Length: 250
Image (cartoon, rainbow, N blue to C red):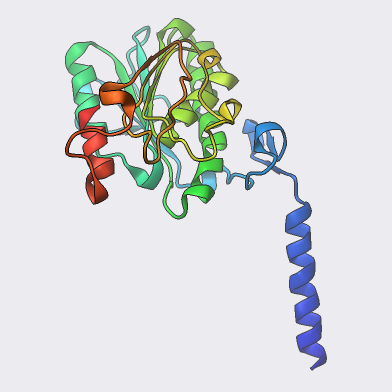
């Protein structure tokens, strides 16, 4: 009986300790406190807990992904060329990466960096992690510029859903030349825009709203905001087809 009581007290103490934790530290990325627009959010996980990876594609390795980190820049990296980060959203909705990567490489001699992170589980657990994902992308972008691989004016981030806000948060840490938000997520961000993508995240922010009636945000958050079909519902996109269909339209 005494062991059970002691166990319950230990569990209660651990729970109270977690509740009192107001910040998480992620090494070189810094600390992420529960304050400001995040005071009612869960604390984020650090990239190492999110299966976070970045892969580089260029015209010389269109279908041969190369891992890129701030201590390992593959030799195929195109010095001085526009560098585009692609960040997926909720539930690892990265099926659009391949098509968009190919479209960019067909258009120009770019560096395309796809950003993968564990966004599965409950939405309200995934959303806080955009803070650390954005910080990691910003760290990579800053490194590329300080190492004279590219100029800041060559940085572009394209993100879908939660990925749009990760781009925005990256831009707040290290300002990008351009950010494109594809149907930025609404829950936790509507009415709390400072938590994610805003116009000041980049020199130019363009946003396409396609699903504001579901998980998208309706309010304008960029320098230019587009609302195809009113931004709330796209023809043929409904039910289980929502994610796939809306991203395909984009």
